[in-house]
Length: 283
Image 1 (cartoon, rainbow, N blue to C red):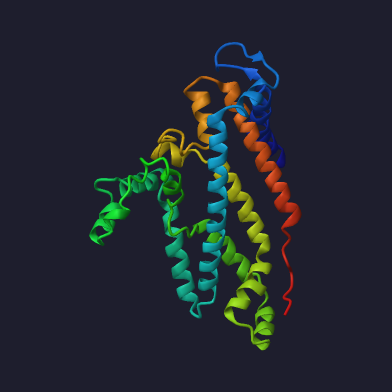
Image 2: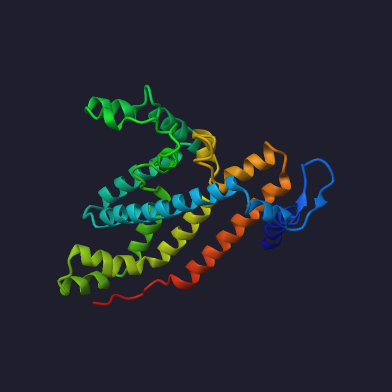
């Protein structure tokens, strides 16, 4: 059974990746014979103002979203885990997981409507509360468009992350909690001294997956802002899409993808090397 799986993996994963590496050193429009250009695509990118803007945007986006999408699901998972009723634990898990069935594109369209400057829910609510001074063109203002995109998904209880943290909490031995209880530990100390260290393996996994997902993010800015206004919500994945499929610069687009790959590889190595899970409770 492993051989067919390995063949499929090579055909649909490794082979396209190797092809992308090769074409990133060429000038290719997708139709004519590619022309080898060496490192010119990479040199051009690091002199390209749009690419540098997209890198800055994704850096800010990644830092903020990683913190939020780690912390909020962990806190919610802890709250659910410590409910006395197993039935209520199950009900809350189901309620938080239900949004997974909503296609991402549908969620983005709903948020686009909510952000509408004229009839959107957000501005209507602000007007109702007498906060007219806070009304904004959320997706049309280059100073706030990127942050408006980051806010999509509020309250940020990522179902996948929630379930991983919940499973991690279940793996903590009951004797650990009993020892902590005998030590008179408070809930806050329990959270920071027991639960966070003992689910650090799950933190590492979610951190890696979240960073990869954010660096490859294309659909959200494409659907909601198309990278605008101007280049204020450009990210590398979106710029790669425009270069390849709108401008016909497939070689340059693949160079962007290789830069993303190297960044992901480096960040993954850092996380694997320096984030180590604890296995015991230290009073």
